[in-house]
Length: 340
Ligand code: PHE
Image 1 (cartoon, rainbow, N blue to C red):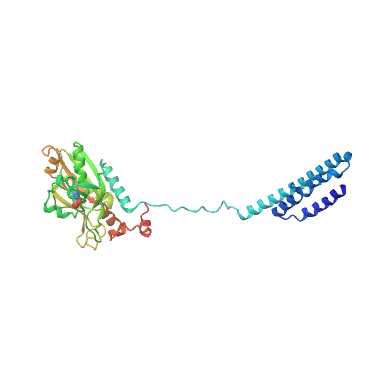
Image 2: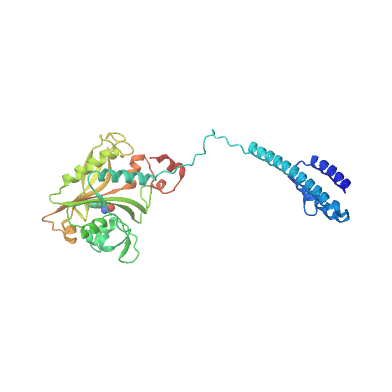
């Protein structure tokens, strides 16, 4: 028996020297230390040992097993440390390296323009109101003094859903909704999406407008010009001038188109202003007395001003965009230029 242990010890030493990796170590454990391995197997031979010598021999085998187990564990620790070291080498993190940048998005030029416009009017005390994009004939036309079959309906090519329901052609129905639910003094801004069956380089079937409405005692065209003059200077620059030209809208009387002096050529005449020195930017006027009456407001006591501004038009002029389609294509090369 003692000889057996001696032989086995020799085998163990040799085997341990050949252990190069975890795999070898696992094999070693399997061969010598597992339940069926050579060392536990020694116990089976105890039967043939003289009875008196058995306890001492059993002790010897146990000590041998413990000793080999310790050696096994030592090598296991060494191999694990080596493995960790290798991993640390290959997976090294250089904390001084610059971080990967996440690309940040930016606001759409229409949103940027809309926000700037809202800011200017908010500074004058306007509140925001938003109406529905799907409107009825009454709010979009009839209450705004555009009767059924009135030729003025031709001014706005309309998408009808039913005979009475349509996609709003302008933000002016917002005027009716506000005046129906609020008493003067009123000072609101109605930004929103509008729709017309119209499409070319400067027109899109879907675009955005910003409506302004002020109703109070003694409101005149001078208030309109003053406000819009201030607005234009804030958006296009303090040297820009405004002028009012007579125009026609069924819901305002008098009606005006507002032009700004060309900020490209300073009024001398260029391709942007088509040689006139002036650029048309919006329509407006004094709220028609019939519109006030339609909303239960007494036109002998109150008067109002209203205007409607195309947001795309302002954005195109401000940024020198010559095709409205560019605003809707979502081409990142275009959109990236408008970081605010
Ligand atoms: N709603 C008109 C349009 O879309 C603009 C406008 C608004 C004119 C308010 C007068 C007053 O053309």
